[in-house]
Length: 190
Ligand code: SAM
Image 1 (spheres, rainbow, N blue to C red):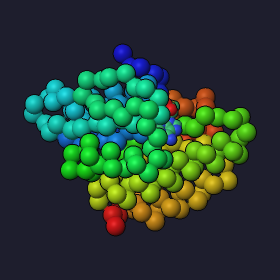
Image 2: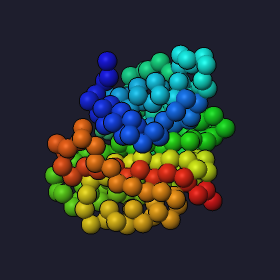
Image 3: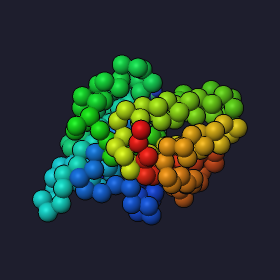
Image 4: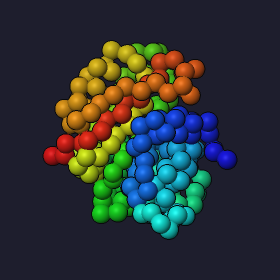
């Protein structure tokens, strides 16, 4: 019932590393078509399906249109890198803050490996900048990157701001050989 196979990457990562749990607020960047948001809605109990545990919140953002999903709020046709997007996100998140920032964002690939690599790293760096305004202390950021010369720079920036940073290569993305994720946990806050 997932909108895209990419759901299995997040399920695999979350089964192993437990980044989503009932009651958490999640910002899902690059959310279209919405499979990661589907997983997040289930795992944070955004619909309040289980009344015995806290109810979470999911906000998805994408350049493209995202079809409505019960339990999620979507900002379609929205560029995460646009400076005005921050205020909109803050106005939609409960108390203006997220516990978890997910990014499966991928720029339009040019086919030039080094250029595509730099574009995706820049998206992640921009998101890290945004996280300073919206991520709760001890919060989590999971971001996709394509391997290349600047990956270490991104990793170092993450290590400055999070206590625990690890590289993840899900089984489910073994086909897309250059694709990995950084999981950064325990945000140090400002
Ligand atoms: N995780 C999604 C899912 O499970 O349905 C799939 C995400 S897809 C691999 C990458 C998405 O990143 C694309 O839909 C693309 O439009 C989006 N994207 C790329 N650059 C973006 C930006 N600057 N702002 C918002 N979304 C962006």
